[in-house]
Image (cartoon, rainbow, N blue to C red; front, side, top):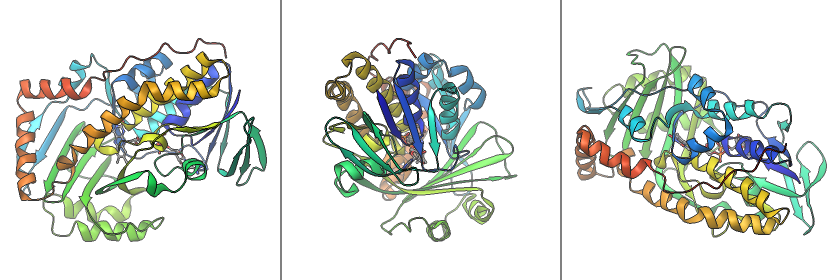
Amino acid sequence: MRILIVGAGVAGHTLAHWLRRSGHEPTLVERAPQPRRGGYLIDFWGAGYRVAERMGIVPRLEELGCRLEEMRDVSKAGRTIARFDPRRAVDSVEGRYISIARSDLARAIFESLGDGVETIFGDSVRSLEDDGGRVHVDFAHGGAREFDLVIGADGAHSLTRRLVFGADEQFERFLGITVAAFDVTGYRPREENIVVTHAEVGMQALRLATREDATMFLFTFRSDEQLPHDDARAQQEMLRRRMHGVGWEVPEMISRMKETRTFYMDRVSQVRMPTWSRGRVALIGDAAAAPSLLAGQGSALAMIEAYTLATELDRAEGDHLAAFAGYEKRLADFVRSKQDAALRLSMVFAPRGRFQLVRRNALMKLMGLPFVLDLALNRSLRDRIRLPDGPPRTG
Ligand SMILES: Cc1cc2nc3c(=O)[nH]c(=O)nc-3n(C[C@H](O)[C@H](O)[C@H](O)COP(=O)(O)OP(=O)(O)OC[C@H]3O[C@@H](n4cnc5c(N)ncnc54)[C@H](O)[C@@H]3O)c2cc1C
């Protein structure tokens, strides 16, 4: 089948990989003018990691990623409150855990596609019309074309979802937290492979030294303020205001913000939909079921969804309705349980009041005890899902 995938992120690339492998003809359309670089570091583990193994990209992920050696939580004055060794997490999932920039994960998957997948950068869909037998797609720049199926992999604010299922408000659940991330070079102190966090009422700041003398900062904070869309300067001003008076290294971090090459800010939301497909159009990744950054597993879930959809399409031998139903049946409960679990972590990223802050810090201290850490890791890192066998290689 000729299948259009809207969005060349982790979900879109993974789907293209598996569709191509099973003899379909995927086309990727990405609104960015070229593959994205940089961005925030993500933790990657679980069943998503097993999908990466089946794709043969783990050696590349190991080249591009890193293994964190310490997580440390500090007070306003920078004194250590709690510390633990995340390498225990690696042991508890038999080495299947890596930290990697989101764009590097997408890049490793993109490289695995070789030359066989048509990829259109700097374009998007303008309209989609499903006549029951085909989907007629009008591109913003590239004219009109027809596809057998269209898959929306265009992230939490998916245009495909809006065009086919309606307004975002029906599906987006704002969690009351805003996230901002940026990186600078030459920041000191520089502690390789160590994540340092500091929380106060309503916020958390995080720093992590990454490659080429860069340091990434991530801020999560409670805010009712409307996010100024597509206006980085106004967003930076909002972050500056919100971080005013916060302790630790936060004033220095904020003063370096003007040098950043990358700035990201968004509302922390989940996407919950009653169904992931309509007719010949389906959704995967954040577009279908964003669990939010609180889950720390959105990329892995995006890969599991892409892999499962490709497998179901292969099994259904052309019956896309059966494939879409099978994909949703296999994954909907699992993904929902991940979303529910993530909600319980909002206290860590932005404690609501004094009492939650004290509880959060106590929890961090407990994580320093090896048996508590093992217990927590065992509960949260093991994905209780059996992956279907992948499509045989025919492409
Ligand atoms: C700060 C932060 C930290 C996170 N930490 C983790 C973590 O530790 N572990 C983890 O697993 N996950 C983490 N996540 C979540 C993870 O990044 C997402 O769940 C994952 O990237 C979803 O992949 P996706 O391919 O569905 O969407 P995206 O990565 O959002 O990709 C969508 C792609 O579609 C493109 N696009 C958008 N609109 C259009 C359009 N109209 N036309 C064409 N193209 C379009 C975009 O440019 C993009 O390339 C984090 C998220 C954030 C924000």
